[in-house]
Length: 59
Image (cartoon, rainbow, N blue to C red):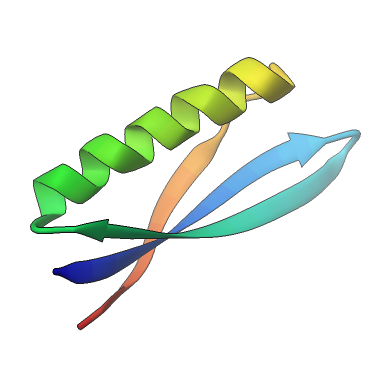
C-alpha cells in the first residue's frame, strides 16, 4: 500500500491554516475518497471551506 499526502487549507480569522494528512490506500481513487471524508469532517467542525491539494505519494 502507498501513502498519499494531502494538504488541507482553510481560512480561520483571516489567517490561512494548513494541515497535512497521510492516507494509506491501495490506489488514487481510494485515497481521494478517504480525503473527501476528512474534508467533509473538517468543514462540519470549522464551518469553513476546506481546499484539498495532493502533495505527494510515499512508496
